[in-house]
Amino acid sequence: MQFDPTLYVITDSTYHTTETLLHAVDEACAGGATLIQLREKDGGGRDYLALAQQVKAIADHWNVPLIIDDRVDVALACDAAGVHVGASDLPVAVCRRLLGPDKIVGATAKTVEAAQSAYADGASYLGTGAIYPTTTHVTTKLTPVSTLNEICRAVPIPVVAIGGLNADNMGVLADSPIAGVAIVSAVMKADDPRAAAAHILETFRAMHHK
Image (cartoon, rainbow, N blue to C red; front, side):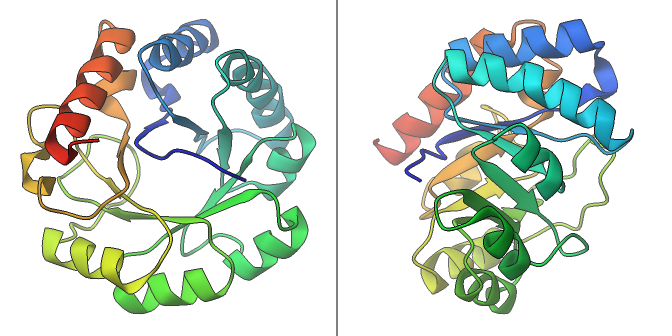
């Protein structure tokens, strides 16, 4: 599947009701998000699927692919564009087998070795970070930009930088061969998610002359 990871917005329902989360996703898409990931760390599969179906309706309206975090079953059930898995989730090769050749399989990779392994197993793109400390309820270990750049050069698939990034601090990535940035709080916590997404996208494109 063809996809554009330039502005990869990842949800965080910590600050939201279902209604405000859906509104934030809609506004992020309006602001130029090119990829959306639904990330729910709490709750069961039934609730996750119900929310995924609502988010997918919004993403479909904007023609933005929806990625489901962790849960291949939820991704299949709502016919999402794909799934993203971390080191403790289902292996990339298993996800690829379950989803088939046409879906997106994203993987977290913090080392060149992990990146090459994920690529060999069928990953479509890699998420690498955290570049900065984050406020999300996800355990993070900081990744030097030098390591990020090495990973970009080690695999032929897109690499997206993640971790505490916003329009004001992504200058450290100006010379990095990344394909895009993954943004959580800078959009999901913004008073105006549409404006925040648009500003980040504009900043990234200006920086990388896209």
